[in-house]
Image: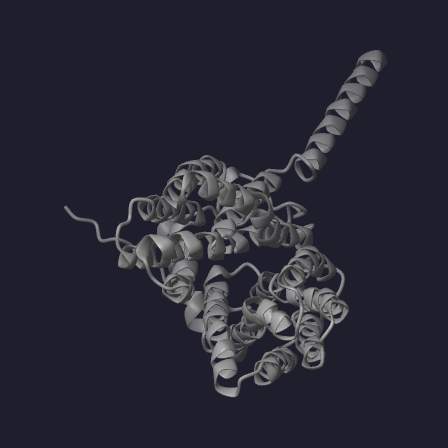
Length: 454
């Protein structure tokens, strides 16, 4: 080959190789489709969680409309949590067996139906049905599979991605709940419900069209994965069902599977008591009602930060350690309330409690991925969310029951602290997250093919 031609050839080859390397680096960085999946997840979780947190804005208008006590309206909130608990394991299985993309569309449609049909209701039982049952099902279907999908897409920055996802539960209500409250105040609760169904549901439908269950469905590697690790398998209904069944049959025989669900239940009992009764407790101790509401705002704001930071820390240290510290801190700080009688003491409590409260929940998806690696972990997470929702319902009821029986909040405070600390010690019983729990689970996959008819 001519020397000049050879030099030109080498130069062109090197330039093309540089461009190829640069393009691959770009695709494994800021231009990776994983960031779009994360943005969609953030938007959907933000809108859906805002509806749960905005429940308080419905109480007075609905109480007046149906001429009933606020307790009767509050039953819908409990129904929603109980339904969400019952649906969570099913939602996890559906996401793995049929693909999360399909279940997201199912969840959005249920959200639109639940909110839209709440607008024209004329009877209280209809509120229980559409806001409690239908919307509760939608929130569970949207919440469980989407969170775990984020861990499929991110090999690198996994903690950051999970942190961003969970920060939606704090930022979503901050962004959307005031808008919902404004519409209800000036246009009525019926318009508020219907407009949320149309606008919120429409935004989620649009966003869901950009959502994909697995990187392989887009012909991509997970962000940060190497060619040697591969992109995994594309969604396949027969294979995905077989994988889901094989994993569940193996996982449910392990201690960690049920202990993680139990840990989530205990943690949620602990903080549900505080969420529901802290303002009442402060007022009971002589604190101004507006200042008492500020206690909730402070620990909600602090928890929004730790919802992001806890998963990020789990990238650099054991997520088991992060979860233990969060649970223990959530529990022992509640004891500060035993003698709190000034607003400064309540605000100090709100800060330190918010650190633990925000850090306990976001670590579950990361622990699942450490224990089960590339398994269909939405199934495990679904059972953990089942425990969480049962815990929220129990905590909200037990705190008030103990107050009614004893006449003060001492027993309620001790219960909250005790169950959180018990959850912390249950975390110590978990196995080492660096060791896969059931590495051979896929050996039990049996694909049942549909019979061919002639």
